[in-house]
Structure formats: C-alpha cells, structure tokens
Amino acid sequence: MPYKYLITVSGEIPLKSWRSRPRFYKTLIKNLSEVLREYGSTNYSFKIVDAKILLESDIDVLEDLSKVFGVMRVGEVDLISFSDLGDLVRKVGERTAGLVANKKFAVRVKRFGTHNFTSLDVARELGSFLKPYSAGVDLENPDVEIILEVRGPVTYLYKRLAEGVGGLPIGTEGRALSLLSGGIDSPVAAWLVAKRGVLVDFLHFFMGSPSASRLAFTVARTLTKNWFYGHNPRFYLIDLTHALNYIRVNIRWEFRQVVLKTLMYYLASKIAAGNYEAVVTGESIGQASSQTLANLSAAQVVSGLQLPILRPLVGFDKEEIVSIARKVGTYEISSMVGEPCSIAPSRVRTRVTVEELRNEFAKLPEDLIEKALSTLKILEVRSSGLEDVIPDKSVVIDYIPEDAVVLDLRDLDSYLEWHYPGALHYESVNLEDLRDKTLVLYCDRGNVSYVEALKLREKGFKAYSFLNGAEGLRRGLT
Ligand code: ATP
Ligand code: MG
Image (cartoon, rainbow, N blue to C red; front, side):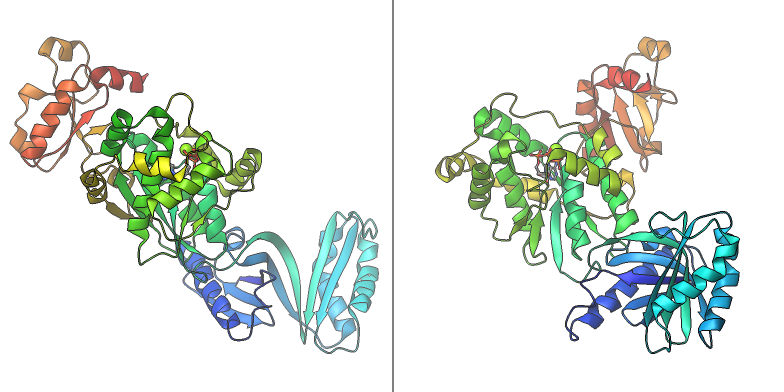
C-alpha cells in the first residue's frame, strides 16, 4: 500500500501494566481506524511494532492521525530491509541523496534489536555517504534531518513527521457530561477532558437566543469532527428561558448568577445520574465574580450534585485558555457567541454562603425545574443538523431555517413596500397547503406573530415567530 505510518503513542501508554496496556492499544487502534473510515479508506492494516503502531493505508492521513488522542508523533515512513551495515547505508543513502542537495543536514538514528553495529556507526557511515551531495553536516542547525529507526532486519526511514496531540485514547477513561455554553472557555474544558481519554457528551442550556445555541452546537461539531475520533457524542439541549425569566423577576440581582449556576448544576446532576462519572465546566477561579471559590463551592453544595465537577481551566489565565482555543479550532466560533443578555447587570455577590444560597434557590418552584427538564432534547452530534438545535418548544427564532416558508403578517401596503425576499403575504396563503412545512411568521415587531405562531402550533403547525419582526429581518439583511 502506498502510505506507511509509524505512530509513536503517548509516553505513558507503554508504561501501563501488562494487564491494562492491551486495552489502550486496542482503543487507540479503533479510534485511528475511524480516521481512515472518515476519509474514505477502503484498505488499511495495523500492526504493533514494539511499542509503536505501524499503519499501512491506501490514502494519506498524516495530519489527521496526529489529532487522535494518544498519538505523540506520526511519521510517514519507508520500510527498507537490509543485510548488513554497508547495505543499509547504500540503500538509505541512495534514497536520501536528493534531499540533502545543497543543504546542511544531520542524520538521527535509533536502533532496536541485535546488530553488529551501533546507531552511531549508522549515523557516521550514512553521514559520509551523503556529505558529497550536500552543503555539509550540521548537527545543531540542519536544514534537513534524515531520521531512521533500525529495528531488527528493517529500517524505517521517516519522510514526513507530524507532532501528535498526546493524551490518552478516547474511551479508555469513562464518561463525563460537559456543560457547553459555546463561549471560549467551556469548549476548551471539554477538549482537555476528552484528551485524557474521557468520552465527553455535551449539555447545553438554551437561554433565549437560537443563534447562540446554534453556535454552541457548531462548536460541539467542530470538537467532534476534528478531535473525537472514535466517539459519537450526545448534545443534550434544555430550554432554560422560563426559568431564566423567573429568576430575573423573583431573585434579587446580587444572587441571580449564583442561583442560575446552582440550577445548571442541579439539572446536570439529573441528566448525569447513572450514566456519567463527572461533570465538566469551563470555570476558572476568579475569572468572573460568580466564579469565586466561595460561590462555586456553595453552588455545588446547594445543587446537591454528587458527582465531581471537573474544572480543567481552574489554573489557567484567560490568555492561556485563548491560545488553546485557537489550537483546538473553536476560538473563532466561540468569539461569535455573545454573552447572553446579562441577568445581573451590576454587582454580584462574590461570597455567598451556603445558607443564603439555599434560601434563594428554594424560591424556584419545583414545577419550574421539572418544566425545564421536560424540554430535554437529545441530539447526536455527528448526525444532527443545525436545524435540530432549536428546542422544540421555543417559538421565537432569529434566523430563517433553510426550507422554511416565510409569512408576512403585516398589512398589504407594508408587504408591497418591502418584504423579506420570498416571503408570502399571510392573508393570501392557504394554510392547509403548508401543513408539512416549517413556517416563520413575522409582523412589525414580533408581538403579533408570536401570538399567531402559538395559535398555529396548537393546530399542529411547525410555526415560529421571527425575533423583532420586520425590523429584525431587515437588520439581518443589511
Ligand atoms: P464560557 O466561556 O464557557 O461561556 P464563561 O467564562 O462565560 O464560560 P460563565 O458564563 O460563568 O463563564 O459560565 C461558566 C460555565 O458554566 C461555562 O464554562 C459552562 O461550562 C457553563 N455554562 C454557562 N452557560 C451555559 C449554557 N448556556 N449551557 C451550558 N453550560 C453553560
Ligand atoms: Mg459564557
């Protein structure tokens, strides 16, 4: 097969006990196979060579292999068999002479097994073979490195190298539920936990902005497609808009953030019960006034969440988090997620006591929480589309789904003067013809269309009202 890769696994894997080591290799090979399947390979094979993995494949996947957790380094290699040192030097020399032309080079050799020569002998002999073709040897600052691994009767000659991400194979370390806002922090937190071999699923709270939730889903998809080879995560979606409104009206502003956090932990404990061993958040100590140690601690106690909360960002500064987010590929999307309308515009209590928080949290009626839980929708990240992300019960949306029919509820004059491209005038349509369509209604400001959409829903239509009506639509177009 045209492509051969020698994969160096994370240093800690070969050091595992003989009893657990096979599990790590097996899982890693399964996850590596996902890369090949994903990119359409029909022919590939794996072999463990000492502590490394040799992969032969019909397609080039070097870069993608390096993103599989548990991979420390990947090299595309040529396999060269040889009879003795002279044979080895000649065969490798002939293949690499072209590479060193007019360049300063260095030869790096590792040797495993029994031979009647040392790695230094190989380096020296190959060095003198190549020197005449080159601009000389430079071990400190070479333009080209010739890297070889001599293993028994075969030499692996590296042609290209990619640094791997490290970590442990996903699936070797249990399951965690990651609270994903889509902002900069929580995706990084999820990634760091997944990198340690954990199967991470996502829990997202819809806070009233469909586009924020769609971005959160896009972030989940980016993590999944780029890094979670071997894992098909779930995206749990809970509509928190009612609860959020209730908090806004009934909880004093200095407690709102912490009560909201407590509610999120509480709901996470319900979703996680029985299936997950930990909950993950993107909190970092002191990053926001709601993230003081006192508040984090009180929120967990009051929420009754028994599972450990993993906060992989606790010790990171914002700059460090941003630089990981860039590397992971979520930074750009996360930057588009606006902070949801703040529920506590001014000062937040930085040191809430368990007693105080217990009192405040008790103000949330039980059926409010039950109602939030009842909105739970579970999506598979790999097979779901963005259109699945709006909670079923949410009526207001701020974008037009691809196959939607847009209906203008304003008077005919306004419609004729301007309407959303392709929109139909409400009075001119026969609703029965639109039974199986997604309908987006708009009026001037979004109030009439909201009520109308609710009525249509009662009649079994899949109807939405556009946020801020014609004004909102026009703004979106400019
Ligand atoms: P992020 O950058 O992850 O949004 P943040 O710095 O904005 O975090 P907070 O808004 O206090 O901080 O949120 C703290 C954590 O709570 C987040 O990292 C995330 O794990 C969780 N969280 C916040 N909002 C949501 C949401 N809408 N859905 C799910 N989890 C959330
Ligand atoms: Mg946030």
